[in-house]
Length: 101
Image (cartoon, rainbow, N blue to C red; front, side, top):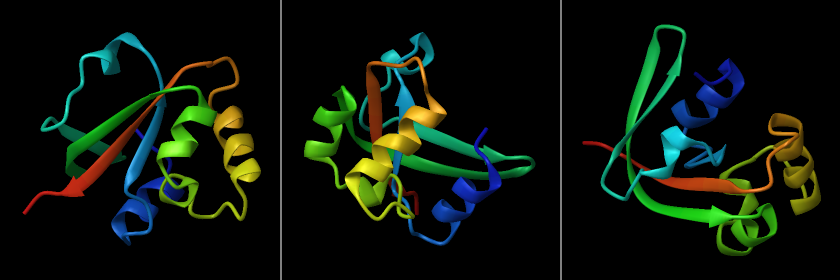
């Protein structure tokens, strides 16, 4: 489940990459899998097109931070937002998502 603000970023096309701390339920994800993004009873399903794994520094070198945190004005603000969401995480996964037609 994602918060309403994050869900609306997907709804209005302002966000297309989902960032998660590495956990066992995400480790086996692969391109072509379907990601479910849910907020309450509202659901989006998107196709995973690419997966990046590593530290935040490594991920933000490969993926524009605005695709993950569109409200951030600098990469430092994006790192701060990620650390607020996942204060104990050191390794992350970023899922590039595409609409399913």
